[in-house]
Image 1 (cartoon, rainbow, N blue to C red):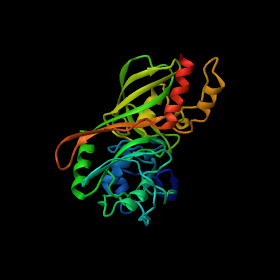
Image 2 (cartoon, rainbow, N blue to C red; image 1 turned 180 degrees about the vertical axis):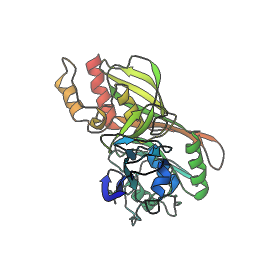
Image 3 (tube, rainbow, N blue to C red; image 1 turned 60 degrees about the vertical axis):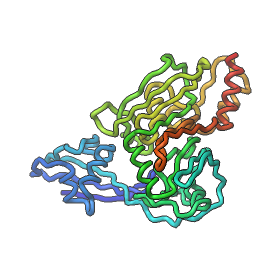
Image 4 (cartoon, one colour; image 1 turned 120 degrees about the vertical axis):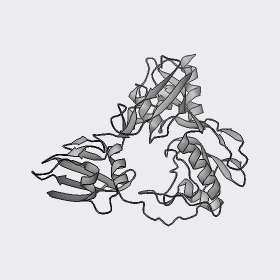
Length: 335
């Protein structure tokens, strides 16, 4: 059996890349068991998760965890290294706090802010600001993420909840896991969304041709089950303001789901949201669209059960200035 290893990097961190060619006399064997015998410290759970996420390939095609290795199969695997311990440095970063008590903190995250330190982003993150302003935040199972129970993309703005103690961390984490929280986002998308409301379904996993982005795949194929509900708030002819309600919370879920149905977010070239101008667009409108440099996505509302009181609580974050300015220009063009 031939074997090669190499290190890869992507947006999320450092990966190790393994390559194998099964022997001519290889008996049929589940791929997770096959790889456990060949990759040091690789657990069955880790390998199954890698297959589900589209990180195991046989003959250049992704496979499910129950795939059986055949003679001369060419197998490649991408496995993430365990998160590296990074020295967390408190930084006096201003935080927009919407609510705080002895148990939770609710913030309105700004754009251009990475949530936690990681490969290529060791300082200037939300976590660096949190540990400056709040002492003894609870440690999560994943290194470098004190108090975090969920995340937002770097250029997505809006509401996040932070746990102040271990009880809150466990309680909130279970709510997100059990999908009992309610999360609503506002997004500006290209095109005239025809239906007043709808649902986008489809597994979300790493794209086959570009591992730095996500892609939608048929249910029961690979990737993770994902559901996004949406409703139209306002139509501007060639742009639509919509509200999205997450049933699941996958990486880039709203961005990739909306792109999949032909309505990429404004300011999101990674998922097809390149700038386009309508006929007779004013110079003001062209400038507004060209200068919108991030995905037009905002975490507008979060509802959850308070870990101590048991009360259902909800918070809303106003749209950020950049989205408000773009909406004002769109209204002029639509009038």
